[in-house]
Structure formats: structure tokens, C-alpha cells
Length: 200
Image 1 (spheres, rainbow, N blue to C red):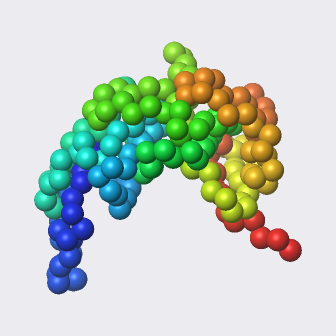
Image 2 (tube, rainbow, N blue to C red; image 1 turned 60 degrees about the vertical axis):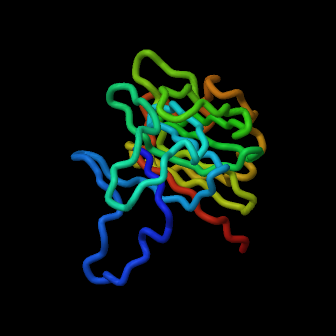
């Protein structure tokens, strides 16, 4: 579900008790909050690698304690895991990393605007058996950082991401990713993070 409200709706003097910001159903919750403009786009990405892009003005403005509208139809056992506000001509790159160490790099401007509420399209080629599970997705930034991951076998993975990503190809949406992290068969990442790289 996606909800859009004016910032003024949340200005209040009720500092102790707070206010109801959104109405959520059972087993649902708030993942992300973005400041946005009508002409900007929103990209939703599911944990299985499906995505949908639409403009913010497709989401009707509502008051505080409302549920919002459907942003994306999901497959069984899939959930929205990530969202990114984008500009119309956004030329940045989005990176996907799966639990199996598969890495996919795609230009944001290659992801077409599909309109809100549909099934979207794969950002990484779907597998009929054991769908991909995205463990991290992020828009590339200019600063230097490194990737630190930990497998379920307690093996640490550490990469200078800027150097590593410079060797990655930029693929079309829906194409297959590759096991760029070189995990062995049966290994899976259980957590991963990016942190700024500090020059010593």
C-alpha cells in the first residue's frame, strides 16, 4: 500500500501521545517514508525482484489516518522490500544483491513507468523454482563505501564496492544477474550492509 499526505497533516502539539499517521492492516507495517513532489516517480521493489514505477501524483492525497492505495500486486509469499523516489530523467544505477550472492546492476532510466497498481515487471529474471530473494537494493552514490556481508555459515564477505562495481556490466531490466560475490554452492548471505570507506 502507498499513501500520500501533505506535511501539514502531521504538524501537531500532541508531542506526548503522538498522532495516527496511517491506518495499517494486520500483518502489515510502514517500511519507508519519503518527501516527494507530484512530478517525481516512485519505484517499488519486491523481495523476489519484481518492480513497478509510477508517478507520485497517481496516489490520491488523503488525510492522516487513512490506509492509502495499492502500489503493486504481489505474487504469493512475496512482499515489497524497498522503495526509491526518482526524478523523471534519473540517470543513476540501482544495484540488487540476492542471498545467493547474485549481483544485478541496472540503469534507473531503463525502468519504464508502468502505472500504479499493476504487477510490474522483473528487475532480475525470475526463476520458477526458488525465486531470488533480494537481501539488499540501493541506488549508487558518489561517495566511497565498502560492502560487508555475513553468510549463514558465519563467513565474512568484504568488498571495496566502488572498485568492485566498476567491473560490473550494466544490464537491462529483467535480465539475469551473476554470482559476482563468488559464494560456494549452498552458501547464503544472512545480512549485509554498506558503510563509508575511511582512508587511513
